[in-house]
Image (cartoon, rainbow, N blue to C red; front, side, top):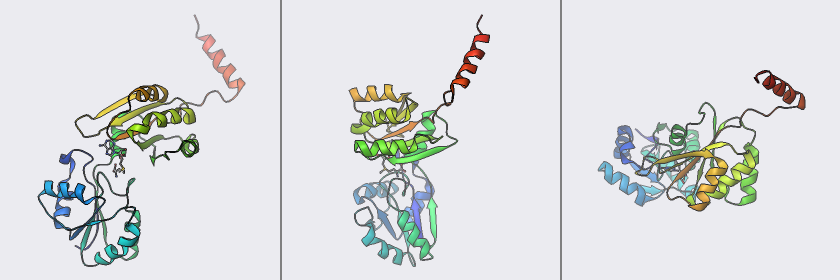
Length: 244
Ligand code: SAM
């Protein structure tokens, strides 16, 4: 059927491509892709050949109207290089404009590094805030961290290996030395999750910057320290009653 199909693809392990995703890719009239070499590999894995059109940050404005026009009569699939389109990847404006034009929008959900990292970290998952990539420059990064320091939620962010140690140190400074997990190469051969405080993780990765793809998960702020001297005194008095 004509319309826009948002197709999640594997983040490392091709076995994670869902049968439904493979089916939609096989039947799409055209596949909008970030990088045609990457998606060509995926289509080869599925055993199909489909016409591809690049759709990425640098050409999206120019390409979008043509794609929207085609959705009236054709099935247009959107994929990114890995994982779920629209999540730190292009696509939301395509969905917005497809909807505005009255086309069907269908999602084929699947792998997403942010959600996969949450399942590995062992930190609270009832409330989380996805930050995408923090700005690389020191000042802008510190500002972005300060903005979320009071949020009572687990934080999830993407980072590159070379920048990881500096990012973890900035998080420790801006948030306090919370528990965190560095998850790496999820669903791939060297998948790992390393847990510790932000400062110990920063020290570890300053010595040896990690290879591969990384998601950082940071615990929510802990119990607030006593708000006033009175509260502190009460806690001390209570503790004293428990001394032998
Ligand atoms: N749309 C994708 C998704 O659903 O996860 C994310 C795209 S974003 C441009 C790419 C970033 O996602 C990487 O730099 C890394 O931080 C994270 N990522 C992607 N695959 C990963 C994996 N297998 N393990 C760990 N992190 C991954």
